[in-house]
Length: 133
Ligand code: IDP
Ligand code: MG
Image: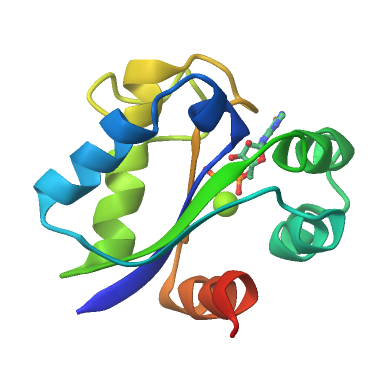
C-alpha cells in the first residue's frame, strides 16, 4: 500500500469539480485517509513548489494556489502514486490524454485542477508538509 498527497487546487473547488474528481479516485479503489479544506499560505505554497523556485511561472503559480481554498487529501492504495499521476494526466494540455482528469476538465497549463505527488520521496515530504500534526 502506498500513500500520496492529492490537492484539488483552487480552480477545482471554485468550478465545483471536487465531487467528480474525488469520485474517480474512489472508484479506482483509493481510500481517503486524511482530508481538509484550506486556503494555502504563501509559506506552504513556496515550500511545496520549491523545486520550481527559479521557473518563470513560479510567482503566478504561488499566486494561484493561495488565491482561494484547496481541498487537500492523503489517498492510500496499491501503487497509489503512479496510478494517481496517470489518472491526473500530463502537465502540458497538448499531451494530456482525454481520459485523464486534466484531459477531461481543463486545457490550461497552470489552472490544471489537481496536484499529485510524483514519487515515494515526494509523497513522504509532501504528506509531512501538508498534514503535520
Ligand atoms: P505537475 O503538477 O504535473 O507535476 P509541474 O511541472 O510539477 O507539474 O508544475 C507544477 C504546477 O505548476 C503545474 O501543475 C501547473 O499548475 C504549474 N505549471 C507548470 N508549468 C507551467 C507553465 O509553463 N506555465 C504556467 N504554469 C505552469
Ligand atoms: Mg510536479
